[in-house]
Length: 156
Image (cartoon, rainbow, N blue to C red; front, side, top):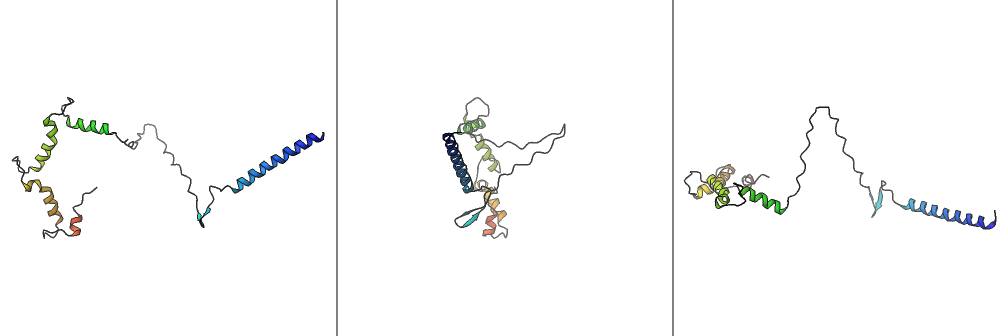
C-alpha cells in the first residue's frame, strides 16, 4: 500500500472514532427517562408508564356479552332545537299550534290546581314549597334552623 491510501484510511478511522466518541458522550449526558432526576434541588420521579387494561375474559360459545353503553356525543344547537320542536309538535305536522304550545303549561297548571276548580289560589301555587317547609321544620316552631334548612336543598 502506498502512503496516500494509508493516510486516508487513518483519517477515516480518526473521523469515525470522533463520531462514535461524540455519540457516546451525548448518550451518557442524555437523562434516562426511567431514572429519578434532580430538579431545583429535589429528586423528581418520572411518571409511571401507562398500564394497559387487562384483556377481557374468554367468552364461552353461546354466552351473551353485555357491553357498557357508548358515551353520548355532544349534540349541536341545531339538533337540540330540532328535538325541542319535535316535543311540542304532537301531531307531527311540522307546525306548532297554540294548544300544542300551551300543553305543557296546562299539565303544570293541572298539577298545581289541587281542587280542580280551574283557579289557582296562593296555597295551591305554593303547596309544594309549603309542604317542603313543614317537612323540614322538625320541631314545628315555624322556624327553620340551619340544620333544618339544609334538608330542603335539591338532591343532585
